[in-house]
Image (cartoon, rainbow, N blue to C red):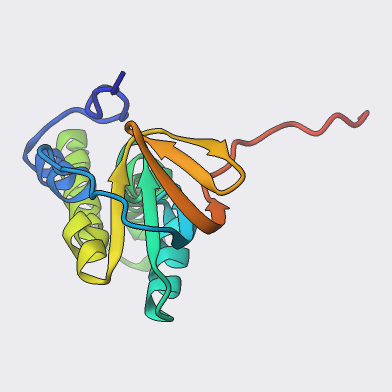
Length: 184
């Protein structure tokens, strides 16, 4: 059963989000038909998976890239890029608040428009997502599949009901933080 990608992401849908989704998981995408074994199957289209897929394809390898949700992974869509954009805005306002310490004059009241800060974040995220859009990957010779990957044999993976054969596989599905089990 396919999950609705707009429900599995942590952002509301506005114009920028719609454009991001068009790049990162086109609504009417059709997975290619597998034709023989791939030199490399990459599971996960975040920063590591994208880099591996581009590099291998650039060296002439036949590459399949599998993504369950949105190309770009956590970093572009809900992690690094969005948080850094919001942090940059917060730092700018903090610097303006401290302008007098640097010889500047501040108005009596400084108003932060959080909605505009969020729109800016969505614009940045959408612009960055275009670099690794589905069409860009295909134009580099990478076969792009959307769906959840499952290893179904020593040299096979199943995605969206299709069996892909491979020589090598790379799992690049990201990580989760974990507290170490050490005393102290």
